[in-house]
Amino acid sequence: MCETIVSIKNLKKCFSDLVVLKDISLDIHKGEVVCIIGSSGSGKSTLLRCMNLLETPTSGTIEFEGKNIMDKRTDLDNVRAKMTMVFQQFNLFNNYTVLGNCVLTQRKVLKRSKEEAEKIAISNLTRVGMIERKDYRVNQISGGQKQRVAIARALCMNPDLILFDEPTSALDPEMVGEVLSVMKSLAEEGMTMVVVTHEMGFAKEVANRVVFMDKGVIVEEGTPKEIFENPKEERTREFLKRYIDN
Image (tube, rainbow, N blue to C red; front, side):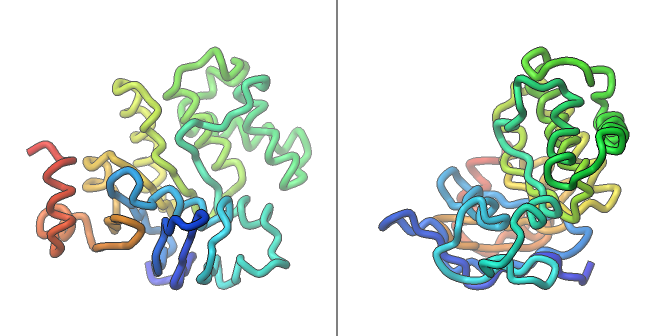
């Protein structure tokens, strides 16, 4: 896991006078699962959105697969096809079927034929356990099923990296497990993933590396064992006391 897929250097993000990210530097390696944890408002989701330029960083650099994606000549559609994102609120198209959601982006961005896009969509819907719902409209399925469709849609782009922005936080508790199970399977297959999450059990079990953020900075990072069992920083210890049931 030594090949660097994303390299972030001295990243800063401001919204007017509010500094949300302060001098963030972070590398993501191929095949790695990195979980980003921290309190609400710590900058986790903003960092994720800066990684694929859904938010424009104020300063700093982001390299993806060796290319500076902050260069104005960058083809952002191509970047976002290779670095797909799964959102907290699913971001599916309610007027399309499950299958249609998985076909649409392939057709628009990758210019695949309808036949090829449908074949790939069916394969990935099968992969996440949603093939039996392929002809349902989005408003006919549960939250957990919507998130599995969103993951299938991301997979249809054949990404090199998937960003997950708190993928279970909008779900009822009984639906969380089915989504985390799909994500765990992807990790076992070697998918490179960056996951902003409050699911500490998932981070402990699945992550190769855990990054703890607070007030716009990376306070500490390490293996799950290092972070959860022997955190170096007092702020990390305070956070874990609040968020983990002893």
